[in-house]
Length: 167
Image (cartoon, rainbow, N blue to C red):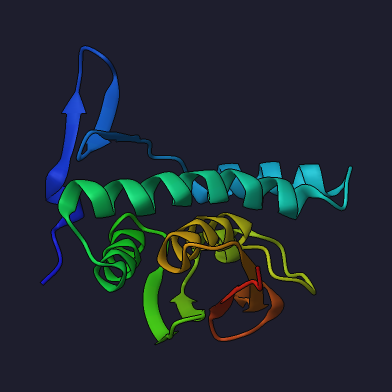
């Protein structure tokens, strides 16, 4: 059984900070991020990759950091991060496949997709970035990361594929 992330959150009222296992987190409405994302998308076609980049940095830090602090194997780290995503309100994360060079997952009810206007492309760039960072830790390699299906496109869920890139 995975740790109950919510019970492990620590609120420091003097610092105005919430942490989990020494790592700071914050609560923010999905609409805040979605409206910001849509505003940026009106000015550049690179908005998704910019958001992905931020998620990638966080995923690298969290994946490797929690694995090290908690003594997790690569598979346990993936399971932990999927569970964390679910428990902190990013949707219901489900692992579909994990092999030596591929990670595939689904996210049901992604708040990023729910809050975003209907669109022709995937919009869950933050999730894609975070799990690209996790996949890099698992494969000890750069990865390609795609959101193949997205709730904002009218799909039933968001589906992500991460593949180890050839060196």
